[in-house]
Amino acid sequence: MQSDLPVAKRFVSTADGRPTPEMLAFYEENGFLILEGFASDAACDALKARIAGLVDAFDPESVRSTFSTDDQAHARDLYFKESGDKIRFFFETGAFDAEGELVKPKHQALNKIGHALHDLDPEFDRFSRSEKLSNLAEALGLQDPGLVQSMVIMKQPFIGGEVGMHQDSTFLYTSPMTTTGFWFALEDADQSNGCLIGQAGGHKAGLLERFHYDGDDLIMEKTSDAKPQGPQEALEAPKGTLVVIHGLVPHSSASNTSARSREAYALHMFDRKADWAEDNWLKRASDMPVRGFA
Ligand SMILES: O=C(O)CCC(=O)C(=O)O
Image (cartoon, rainbow, N blue to C red):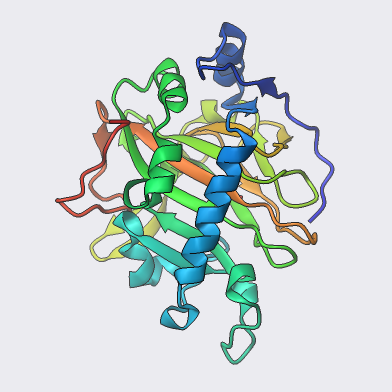
C-alpha cells in the first residue's frame, strides 16, 4: 500500500561501523538509526543468491505454514514453534486459493524464512558476524551480544503482507530489555513496496505487550495501557542500508501492492548480561546455544 509519510533522516555508515556521536544521539532520541551503505551491493547480492538457492532446495509440498501478523495464527503451529533453531519457510496467506492450492511459484509465494539462518548457513553466518556489525553492536551498548534470531523477509510483489505495529521486545523479552534489531535492505525499500515505518521516540513509552508461552500455548499479554506513541516516519532504505531498531520502538510495514519485491534480512540480538525470559517463544536446543560474534 502506497503511503505518504515523512521520510526519516538517514546517515551514511562509517567504514568500520562505529557510530558517530550524532548517530548515537539520534538513535537515543528516536529509537531507530538508518545507516546507508552499511553493506556493499556485492554482499547483498551474495545473500540474495544464497536465499534463491535455499528456496530452490525447498519442497513447497512439504509444508503449508503461513505467516501473518494479522491473527498470529502461526502461533498455534508446531512448524513455527520449533523454528527457533532451524531454517524454516513460511508462505504468504495470499499465495493459496480457497482450496488451499498454491497459486504462485514458490519463489514468489514465501513470506519469510527463519529463524536460525545465521547459525546454520555459512553465507548468513559470514554476513551476520562481520567486524563492522560487531563494532556497531558494541557501541550501542550490547556488552555481550547474543545473535538470537534471523529472518529473511521477502515482501513479495503484489501479495507481500503487512507487518502490524509491534515492538521486538514483545517477542524477544529480556530483563532489563536489551533486544535490538538489525534490518538490512537487500533491495531498495520505499513507501511503494512496503518499507519499515517507525514511531519516532516511541521506545520511551515502555513495553506494551508480551508474546510468551503459557503452558503449551503462546499468548499475547497486554503489559501496559499506553498506546504506541510518536509520529510515524517512513524508514526508507536503499539497498545495502542497515536500519537499527530499538527493541521498544513500535514499527510496522505496509503490504506490498507494487510489482517490485522488497527483500530484507533481519537479525536480532540481545545482551547476554541480561536475563533471557525462559517463556519466550523462541527456543534453542541445548546443544545449539545462542552464540555471539565469535
Ligand atoms: O521487514 C518487515 O517488514 C518487518 C520487519 C520487522 O518488523 C522486524 O524485523 O522486527
